[in-house]
Image (cartoon, rainbow, N blue to C red):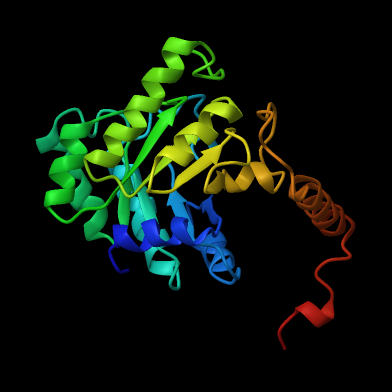
Length: 260
């Protein structure tokens, strides 16, 4: 997988095209996403801690988990750049960040993503040829509560300055999560690099969702910003129920599903 060229994404924003990104964690879904026309990026998010591993936080995800899943997705992606998420405590210092980012790039990532304003980390990784996607607003790795960020003036100014700081230190894009639409618009207009929103309104330069959320596979609570494009949970439950019923009744397998 080719390393992301930051200039290409600045040009993409300048051209006015919207950027689409979705998460993926395994080979089956990556193979399907690779067939989607116009999908720009695949994020191997540390959201796998909740979606795949069943934790109630992303903090339980280890570096080994991210390397494992990033390698799978990068191997199966046919041309769509793959972003490897840097998990909790994997970038506490620039030196540690570089070591761990190299592991993700080494298994096929095109770039890495980090949460929060870490200018020293972004700068060092950039100097070493590792593109960085920033992440501001709601930061799942450190947030005490999952709620909208930047609603008061001081908090909004901090997020705004952090975004400009990440751009100045070489980030090629920034995810804005759960912030007011007006703040996201202001940040997006002030930056030359693209913003990718998740719960940040339509004025960002692109959007990202957790794949399982938008396909209706996530059970339980979903944030306001999630639009369900399918209800695959019902399809899966129905199919498995029919399978179980047919096996128990003896109607599956029939002769046509048997070898002779």
